[in-house]
Image (cartoon, rainbow, N blue to C red):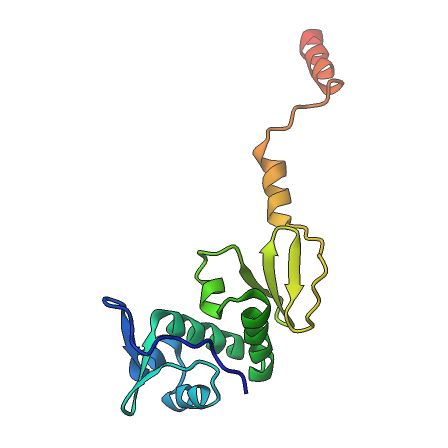
Length: 166
């Protein structure tokens, strides 16, 4: 079974915690689903008696996993992503999606990719670590529309000649 990274048993002072009901409401995941994910160690919160206590990072992870499930990704594929992040990158899902780091999680609806820098994207479901070539259409449009285009030299004299002839 996949095990989440071991964490201290108590939250840091001042760290916000969430109950299962809070996480269910925020992520749209049922209480039973949260219980099952804990039992399967997909996301394992702290336990205080019979209550599950989630930290902010765990709520983020639950939300992202829930969204990937809604997009049609199986839990098996998501676990492969989580395993790769932990083993190969030493990161948790929350570390990637918080936006503080240099890693980005991308999907085309069929696969899940990890962008570790501008020249390296990893297909997490295939474990392919080769570089991929990217073309950003919005960057190309921005480049074309940002700089005013000067008319070719041949157009300016023709326009000037037409106005002089009149």
